[in-house]
Image: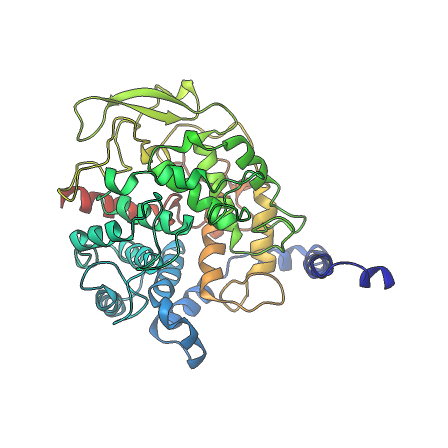
Length: 453
């Protein structure tokens, strides 16, 4: 006991969390097989009930999230979509109408009607509307004004401000570039010097911090890596040290921590797990080399493709430039596609056959942590044992679970093998597009809509 008192607060907290997690694992392994099967089952109906209830109304305690209401919409709608469910038409219409009232008169989306437009809630609102899909949802986005809002948030440093007069960080860069890419309005003005800013945030550890001089963090590392892929400057990062950093963020509990010497947290199942989904497609263990492809859609000349290895040169389906949404809108001068990374190479149609190489992380251990330690059997998911369920952790635990289930695949048009899915095969979730964290078929619907409009 004396030795326990001499430990730091961080060390004591880590020991307590490990004890809680290992007690759950011990209890699980002492159960009969039928009970183990139940414990490993994703409680779909209970999760959908919990999520749908949250979309229809929240209690007074949620008033602290009044400036985050589009985020609540996204966390819930994306979770429901991952579970291959839909909201009823009336609730869908109400959500579209609400988000329209959050849209500022000069572009961008605020945290609620009448509030200040903000890049984070703009990202959440756009992803919500992409997830809902359909003409009404997608046409409700004023792309011209949203583009002007993004330009206004652009800083001379190359980064973006979260809101008028707000902070500049990697999160702002990602939300701006992600939205512009999804809506097919990404151009050279928006991209200018973004890569320089992201590069200045990669730390000595290998991960990426929120701003220059800060500590590497899982959320910011995902945001920075995804942004660099979207602007086709990923080869400027030190991908080897980034990979080393993220690999060592998986702890003995099976889940991920967000920073060095921090506690495991279920949300990093996606923020760290999603990094592996991107790295797998970039194959960062080898030198990333551009290779020529056939004519890109909307282009009369060959475009180089950043890809995992030279033997991918002959793979089918890599000749469509999706990072800018295909054919170009008339909003600004389109970002130069002559060296653009094809986002199709980062989605699920990039190669053929099952993977020969194991994932860089322990996929089954992470699934075990999510299902046994983060899942509440009556619906919803949480940070860790002892914490309460919430919509944020439900969203990112499920997103991470979807990534896990497909971490062994090269051809993700094929279903995962049963051995890659912990628990019953009915646990299998919908695939996501890992750059945007929207369900893949909803991404394709938006891509087609904004390519034509």
